Image (cartoon, one colour):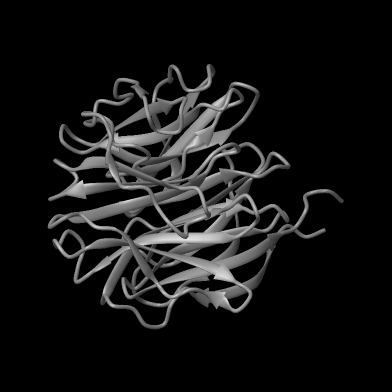
Length: 316
């Protein structure tokens, strides 16, 4: 069988919205199988009218965008939706005047996003998952890939064992100078072997490994995958392969492509999501219960696009 992907669906989550600009979409699947998405929208990134919007996919398509979090006069940033195996649908996001000074917020829903708890500020120094979703460890703990931008670009990890009520965090795992890195995604290479990859200021994606479920991390290195200083996302499929969505260029946020790997080291492009002029960026992806891969991303800062695809098996 030829390695590749078949795009089953390519659609905008909305055609009309009460905001002109949007960015930083996130996608999850609820316990009953419903697809839900969130993003920030307003007049422009970092403006005080930027809020978190939410939509769910029903039989007739996506629901109209609904505001679910307000920064109370400050901008909202980078929502992350996550459905834990047990418990609530979680929504993490940031509020503030910019990445150097923002803080983490959390809200949760017991009814798949129909209603949400009153947003709560995370403890001082805890930002929550910064762009990409938590990784649920074997014991139910959520390992949250995070980063900061106030002392150079540095990656760290945060752990919550009670769905966001209490937290622990690692120290930064890079100095922010040799490699300025943010916004990791977590892949699983073995029973306790994790790999984080993500965005840098050095023109390539970074890679860093842990052999103890994220408690400690090795040396960060640059990969041979180009990166134009733009967000990426990656997941490990249930069959053990890894999928990455990224902009395979050192400048500009087009094209946006899907790549696959057996070892999270050597990657093969299997689909092009966008290749027109413009910005196509900040992907978020999941594997749904039926094995399909769902991706949401920014389309020219004007709309959020959703793509559903099937990745062919590597079995002959």
